[in-house]
Length: 100
Image 1 (cartoon, rainbow, N blue to C red):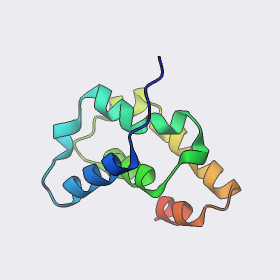
Image 2: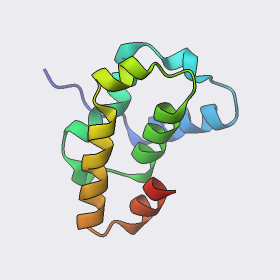
Image 3: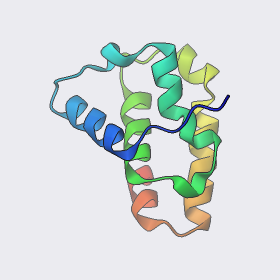
C-alpha cells in the first residue's frame, strides 16, 4: 500500500516549527517520519513544490541527521533526480532553491 505524500500545509507547518526552533530535528528523526518526508521524490516529481525541497534540505543538512539513514533512503540519488527534473522542466523557483 502506497503512503500518500505529506500535505503542503503540513510541510509548511513543519518547516515553520523548525525555523522558529519550536521543533528540533531530533524530535522527528524516527526513521518512518524521515522516510515519509523524502517519499515524494520517489513518485511523480511533477508534484514537487518549494516546501518539499526546503524540507529535504533542512532534514538532509541537519547535524542531528544520521548519515546512515540518509544513505539507506538514497537521499543524494533522489535529490539528484529531482535536480535533473526541475532543470529539464525549467522550474526556476525550485531550481534556485536547490542550488542555493
